[in-house]
Image 1 (cartoon, rainbow, N blue to C red):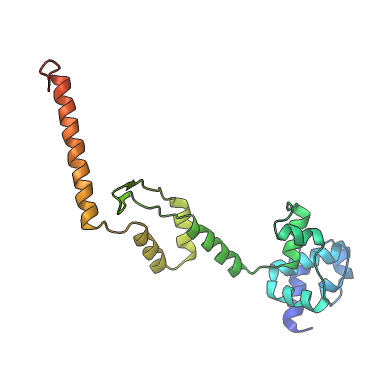
Image 2 (image 1 turned 120 degrees about the horizontal axis):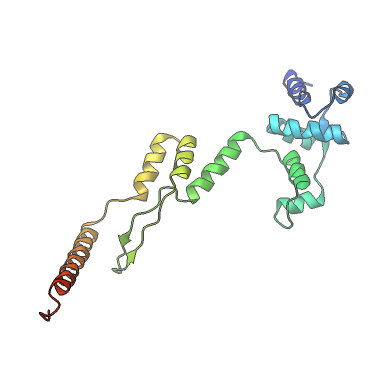
Length: 191
């Protein structure tokens, strides 16, 4: 065992889930080659602390998850807490991978929204509201320049034609409003 592997095992053994008796029985060996509740705790802790080392030890030991856990991982059946724990033990994910997965999900949620606009067909497309808390979370993960570019892309500058159409719609709405107010003010004039 390398010094780094010893350090990983030592950190994993410090979990409060192990009793002193269990700690005393631990040996300097690949935890994925062992069976039992203590081995499962050590496997889970190693997977959490050092996912890359856990992947290497899983490969070395030839260990594999149960059929039920593999089916749950593929979405073929419901994930129970026990199956989820087994999946996490045998398919460890680094914090960077978790962060990247979260960033991808946040980007897909369109946290900056889109403004209302007129399409080339002349049809008005309603605005999509953004989500400030998702936008703030995304900005915590990514570079400020990337966040600024995404924010700018979410609200592009309108074209001259779109500005003209918006002005025409506003003018028509104002004219209708004036006509209605005159009709209400002078109901007998027959406008």
